[in-house]
Image (cartoon, rainbow, N blue to C red; front, side):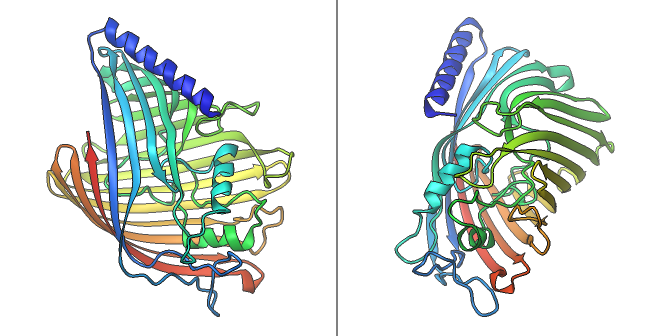
Length: 414
């Protein structure tokens, strides 16, 4: 979607909000969020003069070795939301003013792939390492919801987050099983294996994703449900295929002790393997998730297991699976102690028609402590350790990496 179209969408939405806010008494609130990270750890892969990531004789990726503190601003958001008709109509408009790497938006649309391609060809720093990708003004949510307060339900129309997964804001990053991240081995695949004309690789099943469409949801005493229809092209992209994505989710409660949900999504997308190719391939994707929440408010466990299958018209076949388990304890109303194990597997990371011998896997272990100081200020310390592998029949092209990182995060809301 062009910047001009995005501008007129935001302008029209703001006019609608302004007009309805005058006509009705309920206020619409403007909110914001700024994150500041301090991180410690050697995590940036080294590159050589030919702009390739360096490995040792055992195919282990080499890192910069700088064990010092570094500061960055990974994320900032502006949010406008509220009920424009009390207990009946709510609106939400959110924009990532700044987003580092894939924090706010995965690579899904052709434009997002092209933006990253332009960046990755010019991203090398002076000290032979890879710099982070910073994006600005990514439109996230543009939606109107017709509310059913007694059932905690709604009909939500517009660009929105598909409710496939559990929503939990305890951790700094979403699990890799459901949302992608740039990692040392995915960077190695993009720089050392794929050509500059190839569409870049990203990990994750991509179930934590936004799309344009409508969602109907409800919450009853013993069960909940959500169902929706979407374009299937990701964010900020007009419909470019002849089919819609269909989504359904149903969950059952175990009294006050937890719930078990099943999510299912199937749809179609137009994809390409190379930037220079005019051939557009139809991809059929089927995703199923099994979600479990168990415990009490002071100590609870979250887990998800996701299966994803892609079948392309050119006979490309991609099977992916990911799962995570997290444990969250409330030491006090304002203090949380937490941990998570997370893994993702992909049997065809290079998207070949014959993918025999290619395999990608990542695992991550995370521990953290979160302290809310005031209503809109929180401090968080988090340590994560990851290990990942890329296997292929050509042993010279295999790669692996192990790395740890400690992050101190300050989040300020307004």
